[in-house]
Amino acid sequence: MDLLTELLTTDFRPLDRRASELYLSTVAQVKPDALTLPTPCPDWTLHGLLRHQVSQDEGFAAASRGDGARLSAWRGGDLGDDPHAASRTSADLVTRAFADLALDAELVLPEIRDGGAFPAALAISFHFVDLVVHAWDVAATVNVPWEPAEDLVTASLKVAAIVPDDGRAPGEAFAPKLDSPPDAPPKDRLLTLLGRSPSWR
Image (tube, rainbow, N blue to C red):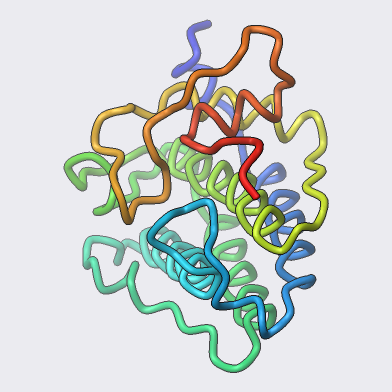
């Protein structure tokens, strides 16, 4: 079985829920005065990064309802005065939306490639890897541990392997991939595949 076929036939929803808890447990450690800090995503402060993930959750939920073609559905995230509560609310929203999907349903994702439709199984895998890696972005920013379970890293590596290197640019979730030593730990390989330096502080 080739990698794309494997991803298309894997139900990522259980992994996505666990990745969400990983991300939320990291966000829960963010103090208000940290929101202006720079992050591993050069164009985003921590506030901008958290707002991005809320927006992504809302966008994927809209796509699951058949209403994801509008870019505005992916840009309206609001942290209010409690970023963790806002993150929890958007995570619950997208988890409920994914629960009702057939894995071969088509989701329109306007921010990916040419904005075409993707099978739900693949779309959920994109959301999943976002959460795992953005959890590291947050953890690195506020200097707390990032400890994804081994199976989350293994699955994320498979998804990251199909993310094209072209089209990555400032302001996007992923930068061009970086070189990684052959003997690098899996967590480090995941980060470099998606344009992060494991030593960023």
